[in-house]
Length: 297
Image (cartoon, rainbow, N blue to C red; front, side):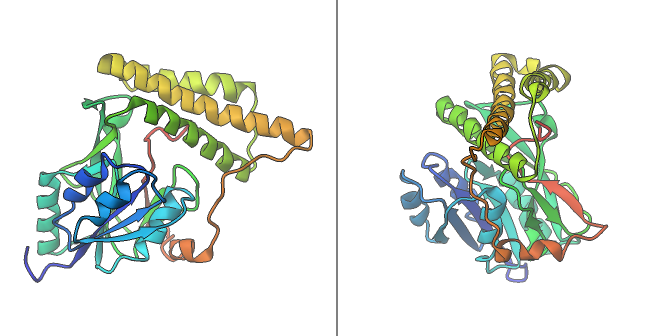
């Protein structure tokens, strides 16, 4: 690495990822510093993260991916940011490409990359993930997440070109059970987002939307070509959609009975979102930073 290139911070948010946090941080050792923001993990995640000399470790209550990452950005000291979730890894080829880009002098303020998704050690090639792209390299102060509990988009400044190499996303690495429960949380958070935006849910949303989600991912987006993994994965996505709208339906039914829902908490602090308004211009490009490319559920 040359002295002339701009410094870069690897940024990671995590919760109970003791099996992933080590490889994730290892893949960012080329960065000048690494900022890790943990949501009070109850396993060895914090211990492992703190064992790396480059890591600056913080803890914060979780109000959604967008809020967590925006808050984490406030602790970045470098000019550039390379952002990963704790179950993601920067590949050696992407590392070399990024370093060369910084040494040459970046022409743009943010860059996008493809994301290769793995389920129990095997890559998911279809189901919509074949077009999964995320902006994870950007100049500090030029990109912010929007205020949503789930599916928060990263708003960037100007054109966002696509890099050649990919991130690895080990979405389900060791335990399938954990991912199934995680989808239940996403359903709860998604229902909370819908409630916050004044949406309702009826028979169509509860019955047809999950069926459409499965048909879209398994048939139209060729999930069946991934074999049993594709079938299981697409059914899980459909189940997550069902949970989201079933929970919202139940809340609306109880609202008519005078019973208020137990909603997830949102971070509405101005400091978490203050950078977003400054970059929302007609030339901006919104780039997806959420857990799944199939956000229409």
